[in-house]
Image (cartoon, rainbow, N blue to C red):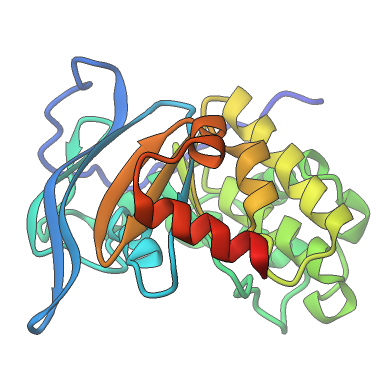
Length: 266
């Protein structure tokens, strides 16, 4: 694999950098809550994520999984408590442009621009946000398309690609911003088993490169293969944070056991 292209034209700095966390955590969440009016979507959450860890967030529909990961790039601002990412406070004073460079996101429906080619989907944000030249951005895009295994698709349009290929483009596009954290919201939805295997391989490669990943999914087999830790949520609360083998064989709570029984049944 060729060396990564140089990144110039960095985005503005985030505010209130307090320095690396003492325990080496990439993400630290303390007493964090999110409200929608009187409805408590996230209820006083506390956990840490280490640099390069692969975290899978499981739970029934409506448990707060997607809301949780969206607080890390402030698509969903939290209302109380604290979030620190790489020693930086994330709150309503945070500059969103550099935050979303540092914390990338791959959406369930990919959100590719249908009128742009694959390579143009990948080069748009680096040119606009990081002020890269067209050549610099294209070199970077081709590098990451190679990394996710679809360099030959660079000049095609999203409609010409399979779901698995579009997912890889979405991952490459996120990587073009050179994030330290990538959030995945249902990355295997509607993918066939072969495509799911490809996503697992890519996420393992990202972890080897030190990129921290948080993934919301309903796929139990995928979770078991990819996760370093499982976060299990229900009704906006975290009920368990455990290694995958422990979660799937000896869950700590009755709610988790019932959830697993339902998932296995159906």
